[in-house]
Image (tube, rainbow, N blue to C red; front, side, top):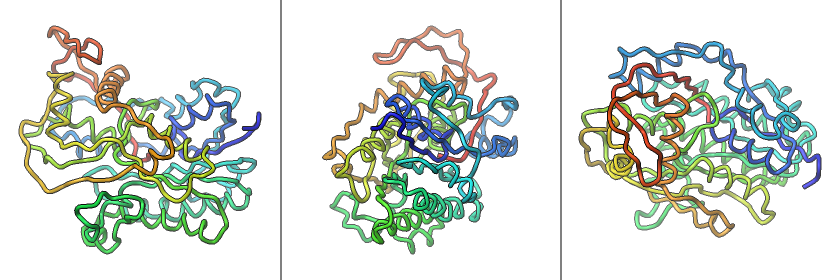
Length: 378
């Protein structure tokens, strides 16, 4: 690594991207980060989020930090003051992307819209940034003669394949079937599948050195002041108190392990093609059971419905490259402690605190005021 080697991270203020920026800065890189206009966030978005995730909490007071800079956390990172430069642009602004990527040796394309589960999806707002935005980033990389690009896709581009053998783990050869995705109107999986295939076409044409990674549901501690969609999905199991939840099996990965994997495939010259990025598969009931063992007093689902949702993805290819991941229990405790400390899970109590075997002492009872800002980008 050269002393002034520059790397660009798209969507730098996002959940996963913030951890990638942090890691790059610690390794001594100069980082160019693209960020969108913070004014794009509105109270309407916040209302939609809580209507979707926490319908029972509608009567509580939710406070929007209207004066908060959602990218402020980036400038607080170690070495950020001297080695981090933020560029105000978005995925549909080709010239802005060119300015951000100019002079960079590598690019980490992470920015992409992630719709909130159960929300009404605007297809144009989803498809254009995911597909056209990826092309804009890669064309800007071509113009800047970037040496290597890591494109963050999703297991959403892997798992919706009804023709895949049921007795075989889904590996990098498995792609989501677009006809099946369209039939169930899973537009997120459509967008991620098309975008990743488009990215790998640049490799086939010999135009760019691109590696793609496909993370599963990303959870763990937050660096940013906003709540992303996967963290909100996880948070609802502690907060929603629903009568019943489906007991489907989902795949998870710690955000810190995901960031480490992204840097690993970037650093390894032998890395090629796509990599599935997932560490733990667990049913909802077992996940809640683990959470209760550390935090027994939160508002968990009261019962569970058996469903056929299963997940069997393989990260063997990535592990063979040298990737390692932490225990799920560590991720759960670090995430919940972080939510409490940052106010995403703001609770007061007169109950006696309980000390978990991994976590710290905590007190819980009714929710009074929850300070949360949410966004829909990774």
